[in-house]
Length: 312
Image (tube, rainbow, N blue to C red):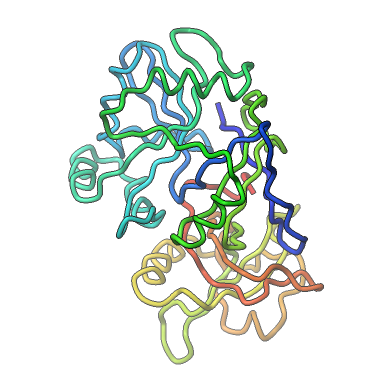
């Protein structure tokens, strides 16, 4: 199963929609982590990403979930805290771990917490057809207070929550209709997300080194299109230090001879570029798109190992 997805409340290049209010809506924090479905069947736990990749071995600290119920399916976000703030990049290395020994070491050094926000099945009963409010009540009843997990808090004042999360440096909020059913794999207007940063996921089609150096200086990114990618711009900000070095290692394994962009890449952007297979997804913060469809003041925010180009 793939998780239900939220509709952006602040689409790139468009005016932001107001945060919905009233008794028909509930509001939660938008967590900066990895979306995971946690399924318990016959005493066995399976953790899967939004692309249905099994990452159970990577997060052994969630093993106690098998004691919650004999049959269980949860939806939630796995987070790791850095100075009290959820940090996606702290999880990036862990999600690709396939060694149980290394996973145990990383779990001890960088423990993660599972933030559960939906209950989809319990003891053979499918809850997806029930309204969110009933699923939420069942979630609070079934999940113990003690463990490497917590139930995502719910708030009535969405606009106040959005302002508070901005002050605290958090990711944003997600607003949900209380009467909404759970629609696996569907991006539904019944759930609306309001991130503080205009962050969008793009596919890397090439990279350029820093002037006079071999290290990563800029990414050439685009949107999936028939036959390749549509060029969206050159991203140079945010690539300094360890983040850029780690990304360059992954790009080195994806070389290709020809340009993957189906439209014309301006000479000023393509000069000195190394083309790569369009497989790696990154998050980029920007001020939206120009009239020509180019990113305005883009800044690299992180690699998204939990996403594939087909998901965009």
